[in-house]
Amino acid sequence: MLRLVMVLFLFSSFLFCEETSKGRFAENNESRRDVLYTNLAGAAVITAWGIVNWDYGKNKPHAGNEGWFNHDTKSGGADKLGHFYSAYLVGSTLSGLYASWGYEKREAALYGSLSSFLVMNYMELGDAFSSYGFSYEDFVMNCLGAASAYLLYAHPELSGKVDFRLEYVPSFKTVDVVTEYEKMKYLITLKAEGFESISHPWLRYSELHLGYYTRNYKGGFSSQSERIIYLGVGINLSRLFRQNGYEKTARFFNYYQLPYTYLPYEHDFSR
Image (cartoon, rainbow, N blue to C red; front, top):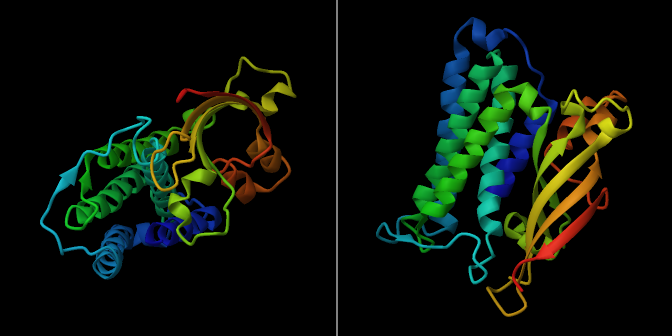
């Protein structure tokens, strides 16, 4: 629940902040202190929440092998992509926030991705002192997500071609929506508009998807558990909204995949 609140708060801030070349914070050197305070505040909230709700400090430090995308793991690897996406989203969000404080794009991207690395892995370190245990798989995915946030934010020519997105329709049957993997799909998207060789005006609204999701893992692995990979052809909603003047909505669809806006070809490689 904490991760959900943190991600939603940061992402809403990202959607409504505006980049500036030089702001009030940069002029009087308050920006660096604000970056530090942002990270310290995140660590403080995680510590307090972990002590109250996640039994932080009640166990000796320990680690466990959770596996990656094997069929017989807890969620078929969906949780690993959840860590990747959360770290990516937090890094991108904080990069946008720092840019609005006056940092240049690459500097904002660096601080944003480092903040994501610190916050997400501080949470993982706390797990080492709880019943969950430290997961090196989660640590690796957190690092990859934070690094991806830097690459795409610092290089607009790359983010114009590639998105990492989450498709999610909540069941409204649980408050722990962050781990409701039964309703989630993770995907990487290639956008035609980012390639100069694709010049046809209609084709520039198209995109290709490579996605992964799991089903029937609620309560753990069973003979009905499915791991599904798919290829899809979809509509670039971000481009559609941006060209009609809805910049913040367009930014949202760089991170969220609206269901039923693409045609998928799926393969269940669990069978």
